[in-house]
Amino acid sequence: MTAHISAAFDSGNIRVLSQDKDRFDLEIARDHQSDFYQWFHFRLTGAAGRTVEMRIVNAGRSAYPDGWPGYRARWSDDRETWRQTETSFADGVLTIRHACASDSLWFAYFAPYSIERHHDLVSSVAALPGVSYRSLGRTLDGQEIDCLTVGEGRAQVWLYARQHPGETMAEWWMEGALARLTDPADPVARVLRREATFHVVPNMNPDGSRRGHLRTNAAGVNLNREWHEPTAERSPEVLAVRNRMDETGVDFAIDVHGDEAIPYVFLAGFEGIPSWTERQGKLFARYRETLARRSPDFQFRHGYAVAGTGQANLSMSTNQLAERYGAVSMTLEMPFKDNDDLPDPEFGWSAERSMRLGEDCLGALHEMIDALTA
Image (cartoon, rainbow, N blue to C red):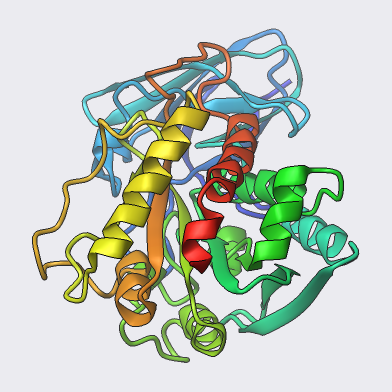
């Protein structure tokens, strides 16, 4: 049987340049109207019992080439469990070699989170007691911008993910966080629902997600550089969410992401905003320290450089929310590689670990919710 590679499905991204029996030369397609690319997701058929070599020849020119050294591609035969496979990077080429036990396999940059799974998540959570749903608007491709609200407390908490659609671990995190937040028997969730109102946007960029983009929406726009002046033409997703935030206010917010190069879980804050206050800084530090105590997967030795006084980029959501609302806001980053503090040779950083981290992040918030409402 002849092996074939295809990507004509939700979030699929790869082009076949050439094939010599079980050896393929591939390239990742750029985001529409953008130079960003790194996300890949494709299907391999007809190769059972053979080892296939797949060479992504434009990997060295991708958005974050530092993401490839030490990285291992994910594969699945059931689209539920995603394991790591043999992967190497040299001379600008990412080579994936896999001994195929099945005639139908999938490969991806990270465990995909499909639009259909997103719809299942939103519909199942929206049907639960105490949860309300609203569409904040529509994307350029006409998809709804889904928002779930739960809780009745005074603190206004916003959780939002996948501004960068290829960072699928962010929506896996959301699935874990929502499962805990809506659990009627969980005492942490009961306190959080009593003390805070949660506004949850599980996917900020459904257009980019369905199109197989790494970082941008249908117009090729990086949403996390639009928060200072979003427009309906370029960034309706940010405009709709920020307009709703203006109505509710924001006391605490987590923007959930994945980082291509850094093999750790970490937080980025808002230290360089012009109106930074000591209270904001202390609460951010308290949350970070609490999360590190609760989760062995989290640390704050490694991460991004801190902006100098008054030098924060206000086009980014974390900085804009801290400046605009006086919020304690933060960007949570999870790895595409593995967590070097707690490596897993078979799975690497995974969908399951992302979900557990979502649960732990709510636990850390529970320990300081009283300070947000003081």
